[in-house]
Length: 169
Ligand code: S3P
Image: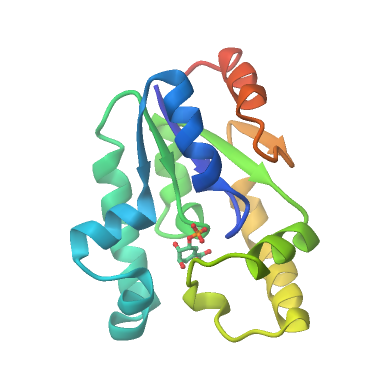
């Protein structure tokens, strides 16, 4: 089984993905981390030196590459399902889990985060809230196509596993 966690930046895809993979006895890939390792550059460097479009191409390519593996949990990037028909592709081969949080919760988590995120760098609280609301509105039509939508799961891996048991793909 291939499980791909999707959702907005800061929703906890990586935090949940690792223990979920461990609990299932699956491999785990954090897509951003994988791209950084393969490319020898951080996500911020890729954005700064090559631009967002180049990043989206790499993201799509590495997504397809890691999806070749069996029994894997993949934490996608926030934009992964929203570009280059990736959501269509995911629908053909993986169980997707949308980790759904409100804009207010996302902002509070993003403000406390240490991971550098080029798309929100330097934004004030109000700018960030506006950006999250606006971008989430655009992206939710992709996220909502997930096999499973989990509202506000905190660190509740058990709940996700229980839902997955009834949704084998
Ligand atoms: C992005 C989210 C990031 C990373 C890149 C772009 C986005 O991943 O892929 O900065 O477009 O939402 P996280 O969701 O893990 O922060």
